[in-house]
Length: 350
Image (cartoon, rainbow, N blue to C red):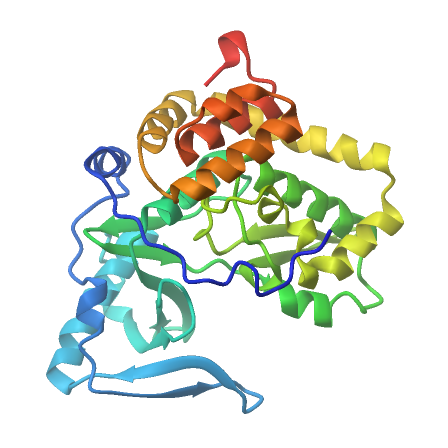
């Protein structure tokens, strides 16, 4: 079975953050007041294409602001950065300057990417300013709670602030790293199987190669790898079950081929069990917060009714469990899928 790269590229519907979810975000200090909103950054005078070091158009535009307006915006962006990175400690804010603000013309969320430079040592970092979408924010929160990765983000009204996730973009990794002699193929294959499992268990969709990065960590016995999602737009949104499995996307096939060549079925199932066990452990560590999130998500609308009906039918068939047919929302489907795949019954049930 294959999924053509065009299938899921229709513009995704945005869903507002309801009052219950805003209360949740405020309780866990995700929702706070910020000096700058997404709409403020649209107040630019001009823009020019951002060209990479190879002279190619990146499809990002660098924005130009009127001088006084630019100073006001950049000061606010510096304050947002220290809130995101250091909890608002402005001790070092005098060393920071905003190098540029870039605007993405092709993403669902039309994100702004802010480049922050420490003038003391010339080190730079990025963060993103996006239009807030409830399904994406659920995805970010589930990533924090159920994955091995921590992620910082803030919500202010209809504005979402996200930290930059460091790693080699998946499509670049497949093109440039797979052919390398120092690639530890088995470790990469194992990690991709675990990533595939993480995505399906919590129903994170659309993990084609450019929507994740690969962290490469040198070890005393060759490299270790971690695959990390960077795009959470399709959290519990799609109706097709296969869209929650990265293995079915065409541009992931080179890594999938590596998995099938190096990992047999029994070992693959072992890695799946290991990952489910780790997810279950993380869930147990944050059970109260997960239940609070579940209560918000199960009563929220983050996809269309047609997609809900299709996914509940496909999950019921896959799991041979008719409880899925009784689910009325993507939130209910997500948490029932967690319950079934992690065998959370009785006292462990979320």
